Structures are given as structure tokens and as C-alpha cells.
Image (cartoon, rainbow, N blue to C red):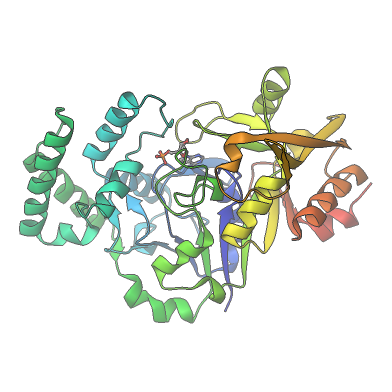
Length: 418
Ligand code: IMP
């Protein structure tokens, strides 16, 4: 059976939404397995732009189905809003969406806490303020609310009362909803989801279906934002790695491939180390040309060059098998392109960081490659061949624009070389 996971290669925003959307036709199911509405996965359908924060990036009109896995933290208000928008244009969309009742919820309290914590930190992380950290914190401290709690009003009420009590004591802050108000807020959203004909079905009940059909797994953010292996503490609070598919009952050994989405240059939003970061005119040129502004928060993204040590590290941690390169067109017309080949960390030169702490003291060592006119120029082929050789995995596809169809295989690109 055809099974592929798509993950972000570095700090997210590489264009996973578009890449998932491109391949989604070939799969019966598209499964989001981690993160929450901190993600902003952009797709185009009939020239219209849609930004999915929670829903998987299927083509909205076709028969493929979506599954939101238990590794996610789900903001129901956001989910209802995305579903209502799709339902207006694509009747029956909701009935093709399945959610694992084992998933945890992001509550309005979590979003408020996200803000309180950022204000209290000496050095803010620059979170998306979507409540992701506090929701995952409640999950690990055993105070979280799961989707299935919505189907047992008494248990939900008890858990909300406990939760509210703890939060008020912890922050000494006024939250906008009381426990009672939160109860009705959540029950109302549950009714909306039921009206939208969304299916509440656990991965346990789906696994025999998944095992007999084709599944595309859609990751969120990127490996260097992973809670365990990213540039801690400047990370998100969930898993950004392919092994997140375990929350849907799969092992990575059951995947045909793990496709990492790799931008032709590097970006990151929020604070934290970024060894190849550029500032000034050049960064601004790439930012404007690449429209590098966050899909969730609108914040300008930090911009820099291709970073091979970071890719080597992320490849080992997440186990990539292939790359798709996105935004190659943004670098068209540059005379020279810089690529970071190694880091200087103190007195040492390293090609692969041993721990995520190395990113904090890394000084980039660059090589310069000639630029290209467009992605059918020989110099562009040299650029991708260089990266393939240095990282040891192929770049199978090249994306050269935001629309889903603006992508071609490397072999097609080579056939059309000028
Ligand atoms: P949080 O996930 O909102 O807690 O944010 C933690 C860090 O991850 C911040 O630096 C965010 O900017 C970053 N982050 C979260 N989601 C995304 C994403 O989808 N793309 C890129 N960066 C993200």
C-alpha cells in the first residue's frame, strides 16, 4: 500500500500544504498527525487560496478523506470555522472529515495562558499564541481535556472545574470564561461539529481501513521546531517528526518514504538560533519576493541561506528519504548563492551538530555557488545536485510557485533544461 509522510525539513513554513495538496490525489486518506492551529498550510484550488490551520490539505472537491490524529491538539472553534468555510463551497465536506476522539483540545484558556507566559518570560519564544504550549503542558501534567470528554457532560464538567481551579491558582489572572461558561462553549462546538456531519472515530477503529488503502501523512512545523530535538527551548511543544505517525497506529517502517520539504533558502519565525540568518537588504529582497510572512500570525519571517549541517542533523533525527524543493523560483536572478557547508563551534569545525545546543554557538562556513536565471538553467541543476550529494538523498520534485500545479519532477525539469 502506498504510504508517505511529508514533514518540514528545518523550521517549518517550507510549503508542506502545497506539497501535500499536490500528492493528495493519489491517496484515499490524508492524515494530520501532530501540532495544532499554530500551523498555516496554504493551498490553492481553482486559483483561490485556502489556509488550513487544522484540516489536512486534501483537494476540497474530490473524494479523499481527512483524518485528524490523536497527536494533535485541536482548537474546536478554529476547526468549526474552517469546516464551515469549506462546507459553503463544497457540500458534504464535513462528512469526509474524521477526528480521533483521543485528541486533546486547545481551550480559550490555553490561548490566554500562552499570552501570559510570553509576557512573563525574560526572553519570549515568539509563539503563535494559539495555545499550543499550554495545551501540550496540560496533556503531560494530566490536566488536559480530550475530545471524548465532550460526550460525557458530567466528566467534562468535573475536569473543567479542576482545570479552572488550578489555572486560577497558578496564574492569579482572570480568564475570560468561567468553568461553567467553558462547558457550554465546548458543548455548543460539539453540536456544530455534529451538524457538520464530522465523524468521531478513533485510530483503533480506522486501522484496518488505513492498512488496506493509501495514506498520506501530513506533518506540521519542521524538525528543528520539534520539542525533543529542535533548537530547545525555541521550539513548539509537539512532535514534528515522521515518527508522529505512531499516534495513528503506524510505525515509520511501514512508510514507503518520508518526504522532507526543503526551501531553496532557509526561514524561521519566532526567536531562537538561526546560523545562516541574513539581515538587511538581501534578506528583505528574499522576504518580499518569497512573501515570507507567517500564514498564521502574519509576522515577517527571518531569512537566510541553505544550511547543510542543519539538514544533516534533521535528516538523522527524523529519517528523511527524499526531498521536495520549494520556492526555488524566489532565488532566480541572483548572481551568487551561498550555502553553509559546516559550522565553526568554538575551535571545532563540525559538519553535523551532535546536539541541538550546537546551533546556539554555530558560526556558518560558506561556499558560494553561481546563481541561475530560472529553474530550467543548468546552474540550478548544479545547485540541487550539490545538495543531493552533500546530504545523500535525492531531490525528487521542484516547486516553482505557490499554485498546486506549479511543481515538476526532477526528471521533467532535466528534460526541459535550456
Ligand atoms: P508555538 O507552536 O505557537 O508554541 O510556537 C513556538 C515556536 O514555533 C515559535 O517560534 C513559532 O513561531 C514556531 N512555530 C509554530 N508553528 C509554526 C509553523 O507552522 N511554522 C513555523 N513556525 C512555527
